[in-house]
Amino acid sequence: MTDVRLAAARVLLTVERRESTLAAALDATRPMVPSVDRALLHELTIGTLRWRGAIDAVIAAAARRSVRDLDPEVLAVLRPGVYQLRYLTRVPPHAVIDSAVRAIRSMRRTSAGPLVNAVLRSVVRRGPAIALPPRPSEPATQQAWERYLSVTLSHPLWLVRRWIARYGPEAAEAWCTFNNSTPDVTVRVTGDAGLGGVEAGLAAAGIAVRRARYVDDALELPAGVLGRLPPEIAAQLRPQDEAAQLVARMAEARAGQRVLDLCASPGGKTLVLADDMGVDGEAGLVAADFRESRVALLRETMARSERRAAIVRLDARRPLPLQPAFDIVLIDAPCSGLGTLRREPDLKWSRTESDLPVMAATQADMLAMAADVVRPGGRLIYATCSSEPDENDEVVAAFLARDKRFSRHKAPIARVPSELVSGDGVLVTRPDRHGLEAFYAAVLDRLQAA
Image (cartoon, rainbow, N blue to C red; front, top):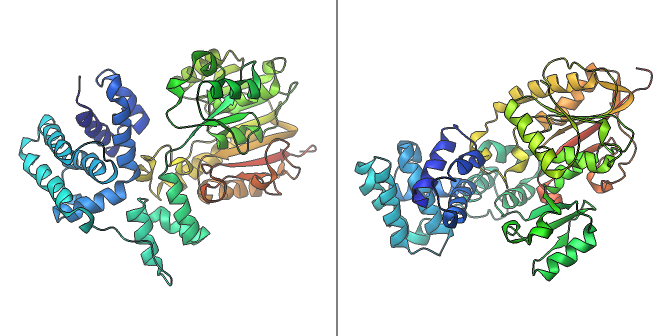
């Protein structure tokens, strides 16, 4: 078995090299890390990535050099060590330092042991003397806010600048604070007991529960509680982010319709569509994805949930081998994922501003392909989990300028709160306003005569 701190360093190194996502890298450690240590492994890796900007500033001060001058293996060991020393209190400092030195030696970097030891001891010795940029006092300069948000609240400078420009520094601060918090678990209730019955069962089991704020058939549970639920209750719950559920609800799917869910894997939104269509309407539901592994995951999700859909492999970047016969087409386009940084903190450091136009070009192609299979009078929903207009409003505006068959949806969306949807049929959820991850969904209507 692998020591948990060594496993954390290897996971962080894999993510830093962009060889894997954090979720995939963590999953790959299952055969090597005992189950008793997995919670600590998740804490070390997720916490380190969440606070990497601040951690790197501490390392630079303690090492008296830029983190860019440190070898990747050394940095992968130092970062979780500093995270434990600055943000956790359960492990004594000497144990953190000793385990870090052992980890770097296990990575065949024995010569770096003294450096790791010296940097971490400096962090302990200097303690609060290694100060991070404070929250600016008024009047504050743009530069002061940028340093505070990018270093102390640990977000990429390019993204911080965008949020300040659009929303102002205080809203950007609230957004960063949200991203650095541990999310609760949102679950949909799918069993026969109904919402009230499941609530009563959870209360009887001593599990704190509350109704979701914006989705009428969902509950919020404390983080880390899913593994402790009684099996009979767990079987009636389906974890899914609340904002993602709202995206699927924008479709207003119902029995008797033909519905296509493009880019559907892993299948969470497909299941919402299936539930809204009912058992009698599931025959009209088609779910698609491109990569074989994604299609397999989609099949697994539907089978596990005992819901039906025709599952096919389609490349949404190319003309689809389908007729314009669908009442609803939902395209949850591949995107930067910058709206989900609370749950996927590795994306903070793997995405760059130059990624956005590349992704927007692909998204525009997919939206055009999806439009061709919507019937006259049907509905097209374009969605992302991005916070950035490059992938959202700008993609939709360019599409509408090109394709005169479609117009913006003007009617209210029945099961989505009006405060989340603009008058032209656009869902925008924001951490600073709604306490939700940043999701986007635009409803576009195909004209009857087009």
